Image (cartoon, rainbow, N blue to C red; front, side, top):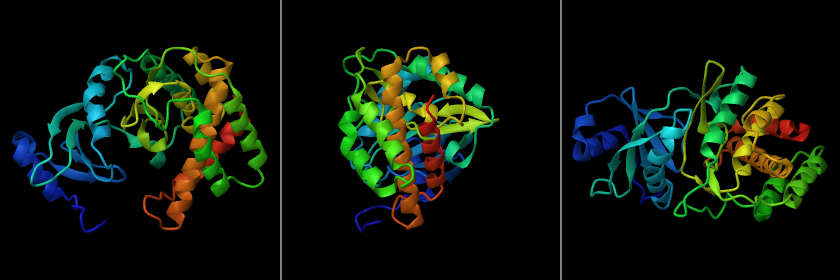
Length: 298
């Protein structure tokens, strides 16, 4: 924390609620572990307060405010939906949002034991999400496009954490993805950041999807990578069969992006082991397990 940052405490969040939404200020308040760009506080049993922390601009929160109410009604899993807006004030100069609470345990602290059910559930969710986005939908600069646009990021992750005994195989998966034909359909809504901390599980299967700050219009392969990043071994084929809209090129792009995301998780784990800011030690094993699934294919 720098000298210019304001520490986000329960007292501060309570004060903000009293100032702007006093009818909610009496509800119980407890911090939710995790988060980097935003800090989360659970408010009562049904709500959460999402407070802008490290994100340099409010763009991601404002995007969620604008589009989640549009998307949520047609999605078959719970997602956080904004219900109240908190605006910058003299007490706190950043944005914050009161959203619905999505019940369950984050997958990076839980597990999926009902793999076939989770594969069907994820496929159904993505089929509902992946519809043509309107012209005014956000376009991301770092995701949603062809994997070849991420070559620099892949190289950085690859050099940092790719296991020596798997390097050639990982490289082959990535090269195949970058050589695959591009998405030829209209840009569709994509979540853009499906990894174990952004989904919740309950009773051994997927129970909700959270953190839509990176949603954008683009190539659905960015989300289809979740077949390997989120789901347990052996169910990727079932996922793609149920999803039913991914051709061979999309699966090739998705597999390469899954390799990229797996290496990212491994790097975050390495950073956590070294005590670096934002590092998460428990992401390392999750990333390596995902990479192993990627290399086994569909």
